Image (cartoon, rainbow, N blue to C red; front, top):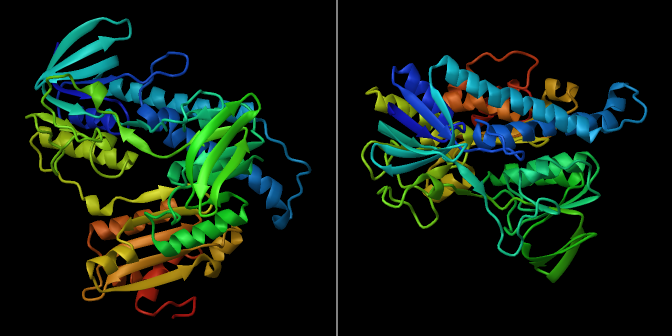
Length: 473
């Protein structure tokens, strides 16, 4: 069988690339090997099946439970004793996942894309080996091939996943009851989100992070505010602590770690390993594919996601850059347009990052530390949600918005938020940076009152010491 384009991988990068290629009038096949616990196949990759979507479902459920227990009384709402039916919560999560993975299959059908479930492997330029669900092997041909096989959790050599007491991020979404205690290895995005879910539901959660700095990739002021909020929620976060061993017993797991005080131990019922993810490139490449791969398994590509082999592209987690679903999707769109002979480009300087905890954390562009290191003169303005009427009415008045602008021409260089709906508010600032807007542009943009977005407006005003609803510093 011959196609114009074959996409290997149907995660948020692959399925979007396939759809755009089809919209461009190309004949497309998309191969995906994701399998659920029961062995059934599903499109959508880690994001839809065991990552972005199911984790947000549990974050929402657990946040509502937390608010019912600890916040409703402030609003004058009496509920009596509130309980959580974990099985019902998981059932809702699974229903959402099934809706969206089924939605990908429907999109394939509507766009006349041949969705193939099984293993795809690039043999050489223009040839892909396809092993279907029954094990039948065939060779498919295409003018262009897009590799979008994503990433997988990193497993610690001394702490192998057993699917019960030691689990990866997928396993942490499927606990059928609330563990009494949980140890989370890694205080990154995944560790904080999953730790928050089970803490809200009643587990004692200890997060062990090897780095000395909390959220080292984020703005320091944002990280400091977020850490204060998490500690207030009684998340026990241990920094500068390196895990060195794990002893599994019927009663739980005893972790061994080193910190500034020396060797420590921690006994927990469950362990969630969230130390990062690695590119899944090996399974997509035949021995003689010719595609160059780094020592870390990352497929080497140029700015336009072209690999070392003509007419073979790679996108998403399997290439350089942040492992983010929206980054993968936009690369998929770019590559599909380039294949169709259209002008396409992606601005890697304005990719937003979001952590969906409470408070939410979001940023785009450069932070203050990066600007100082680069020797760029800048102005900074911030506005606290404590001065936002909308945030106070929501009982979510912690955190702030910070905007950084070039001191010479006022162009926005970065934005950093911690607080309510930060993941939504960041979009205005991403758009502003995409259009190379200045802080003054946002100052002169009318924002609805009362709204959380006013905090963005006020932060832009504060860049020039013109904030109207807080004291300028």
